[in-house]
Image 1 (cartoon, rainbow, N blue to C red):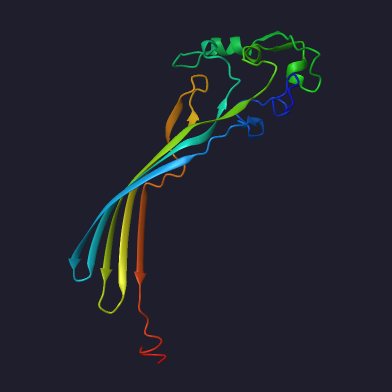
Image 2: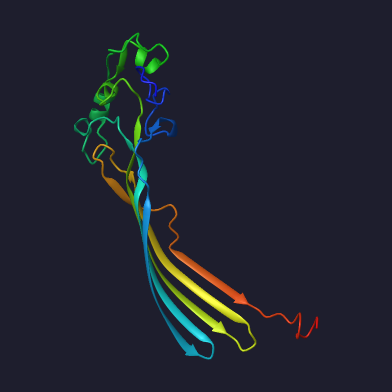
Length: 212
C-alpha cells in the first residue's frame, strides 16, 4: 500500500468522513465466519388428513467482518453534550498552522498554510480516512413457525405456514472511538412471513378421466 503523506493507505486521497470502500484495509490473517443453528419441532396428526406442526428455529453467526474506523478523532476531544455543542465544533474545525505545508502538492486540504485542528488530532494525521476489517461482528436469528397441512382422499393437499421471526445484527459502531458494536434490526429482517401452497391431482394421464 502507498504510505505517502496525506494519502490513505490504499493510495487514495483523504475522504470527507466515514469509511469508504476504497479505503478499507483487510487483515492478512482473515478469520472465517461461522454459524451455529438449532431447531426444535413438534407435530400432531388430528386425523381426517389434518396435521399441525410447530417449530422453533435459532441461528447465530460469529466472526462476521466489520470495518472499524481507525483514524478517528480521539474520544477526549469530542463533546458529550446531549445538545449540539457549537463551541466544540468551532474548536475542532478551527484552522491552525499546517506542519505538512508544501509536502503534499497533490492534496489541497493537507498542503495549504493552515489546516483544520481536527485533522491534526487524529492518531495518524498524515493519512486520511482509514478503516480496518475486524472480525468481531455477529448476528442472532430466532423464529417460531406454525404449519397446517390438509390431505384429501382425492390426492389433493393444502398447506398453510406462518413464521414470526427477528433478526438482529452487531455490524456497526455507533461511536468508532469506543469500539462497541451497536445492536440493530438487520436490513434483512422480515418479521412476518405467510405461505400458502397446494398440490392438485389433475385428471390427465394413465387411468385418469382424460388421456387414458
